[in-house]
Every structure is written in C-alpha cells, then in structure tokens.
Image (cartoon, rainbow, N blue to C red; front, side):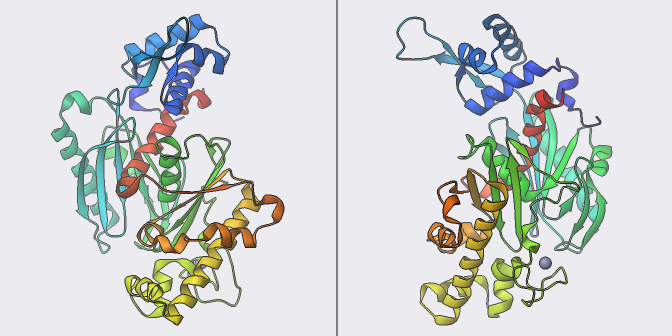
Length: 386
Ligand SMILES: [Zn+2]
C-alpha cells in the first residue's frame, strides 16, 4: 500500500503493537492484565509490547488502580504528546489548520478566509504554506513527531486516493488533493468527506466511543451522512456511502441543486429553508420561536422529514447510536427538540428500542479534530492492515 505513515517507517510495524495501542486509546485507561485478558495474549507478551510502546513514547504509566485487594495494577494511557497530527478543514467560508495531540486537543491553529473564486491550486498552495508556517512556529522537536496530515472537506472524495471528484458548493471538480499536497510537503496526506471525519472524531474522542455501530446525520448548508459498522467506516464502492442528502423523499418535490426533484436536503438544509422562506435562517427560527404559522409549518415539516430519515437509517443499518451533527443542529437545537418522539412515531415498533440518539460534543473545532481523527484512525488500523 502507498499509504504508509511517515511515523511508522522508523518504528516496528506489527499487528500486536497497533492492536494494543488502539485498545489503550479506546479504553483511555487500562492495565496490562486487562489488555492480556481482552486480547488473550500472555502477560509476558503484553508486557514486552507495552515496554516498546513506552519506549516509543506513545504510551505512559499514570499511576495505579485503586481499591483492589492484593496486587495493584499500573494504569496505562496514550501519551497525548507522543505524536501529533496536522488537521486541515476546508469549509465554504474559511480554511483552518491545526496542530493536534493524539487525544484530540488543538494545540495551535491558523486560519485564512476561503476564496470561492480562487483556483483550487492557489488554495492548496496556501494550505501547504500555512502548514509550513505552523510547523516552524511549533518547533522541530514537536514537528518531527507529526504522523501525517488529515484534510476534511465537503463533497465527493475518493478513498484512499484523496481526489475530490466534485464539491458543488466550491465548483471544484477532479482535484487530486492528496497527490498535490504530498508533492509539496514531506508528509502522508489523508483526505475525506467532512461528515465521515466528524463521525470518526466522535468515535475516537467523543461520547460515542464505546459504540461500534453508528450513523452520523449532518445538517448544514447541505445534508450528509456517514456509517460505521463493527468499528470500521463503511465507504461503499466509490466512498459515497452515506450521501443521504440526495435520497428522493418526494418525486414531485422542489428542485435540488443536483438537478433532481424532492431530495431530502430540499426539505431540511439551511440553504433550502432560506430559499423556501425567502428569509435568512436566523429570521426563520426567530419566527418559529415567536409562533408564526409559516415558520411553524416549515420547521415542523423539516423535523418530520428528519424523523423519517432517522427511521430509514435505523431500518437500513441497525445502529446502536444515531449521531446528529452539523451547524444547523448546533445553532438551532430546537430543530431536534422532541425528535426522538417524532422518529418513534415513524419507526417500526420492533426497532424503537434498538437505538439511541446522540449529539456532537466536540464543538467548534470539530472540523480540524475530525481531520486529525482520519489520521489517527489509519494509524491505529495498522493492526487491521497487517
Ligand atoms: Zn439532490
């Protein structure tokens, strides 16, 4: 595979090493004997590998397990400063570049305004330049520990090639982002759709850490989705799995920007609600709070369509958790008020108790943290590759 991480070239690459590392990341705190129990490996083998992880500064000992009678066990944790990731988010209005620790904390950040009229190469040159500035600011000691660069953005992106096939909002077509940036910078670059990176960020660092089967529904200027089955991101044949914004909800419905009629996003995305109401989104939600009838109709319809969507997703993927994310939900939580009840009224009885709803918890840095989650996920997945 061409996706070797820079970091692993100087380290032992083997199955058990990354398996234990990913278990330590997942459990946050765990002892050697718990690791042995989980993996069915001998205490001696676990001890040897943990020693290697500690020598490589990826794992640290943080004290002893309390309250147990008899032998106390030393607790292991991921060393947040053992390695770093550069996370890049390209959004409709700005580009953010962050230096992120292994536990998903933003240490330093730069940003610039995204120019929609700018040629993709000019924007990518600026991204490369800003990354170089950030690395200089951070200093060589830390910069040398960067595993790879992750980049998250809207649109259809191929995986693992990292070519953006199209981003309707930016008018970008067929831009080989991974190849372009890897030629400019001495790092491996991972590129993926932003909804997928939000789901990964919430699974690695957020509140849905303990679940293996999850779906993310994202509502912003458009609508998107991402799916994780048995701990692995599902991508489909062309990495477009989860593009729920263009599911046909009404074949006679309003015209979507994809050129078809009645797609899901024509009923619930911010831009479409604005188009419908001929008013800015703030005014629509203000009118809703004020009890104005036109806005009640519009928002209640959006809620109903969201409920149907969640119900469809439950039938299709049987997730333990459906994560609701995106700026429209974060800025206007009223959109998901009573959503469980609305969803259940649309859901087959037998499936009503099978899922939980969750909200995104990472907040305003979720774009760059999500981009770095793409890298951490690939780094830890080396136990799956090998
Ligand atoms: Zn559409």
